[in-house]
Image (cartoon, rainbow, N blue to C red; front, side, top):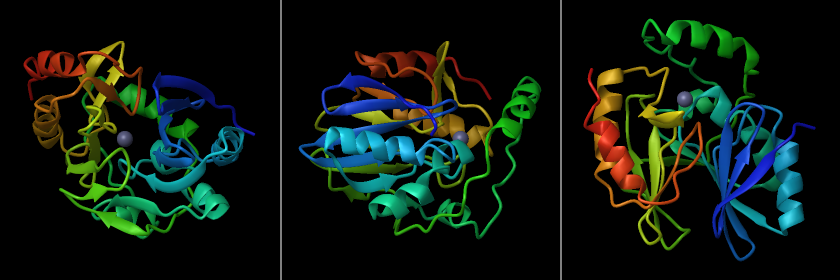
Length: 231
Ligand SMILES: [Zn+2]
């Protein structure tokens, strides 16, 4: 069974770290929402964690269609019966109906991409039970708002918990040594526009697809990086 490291971000919110990639688990009472699923093979560790927490998985929200976020969605859906939610533009990729579009790599990203991609197992296709769009509000955390933030992929989303001022950025923003535009984007210009949009939100806590969450005054850090972004 794949290992998972579990870290408390803030009360109600856990960071799940896998060998590669990460996911987040939001809990209210016994009800749980999973945001991303890690690479394929992480499902049994997540199911074991849910059992340990006496939590019931209500939904699986995918920030985008990449292998390290979608990987265990099919396994978890089968094991828990929880519906899978993804943006309409990435849903066909999650379902395995369309290939993942290649990113447009910068020169420095190429060797990184070539070293990582062979280590990430291909995810089994997964049904998408609900296709998401800009402005949808999901029934957890007092109303979790879906933002369409294309660029990393066409169907990338962020999830914003306005009541607790927590933002999940997916891979549009990363925090690997520093807050940065995510890597391996299909459209860098649009990804930068999306970064600016996220930076303008009133956030205290930001949870990234890769790297440590920021748990205080995160909005100011996003804005500082956004101000320096160039195409
Ligand atoms: Zn990605």
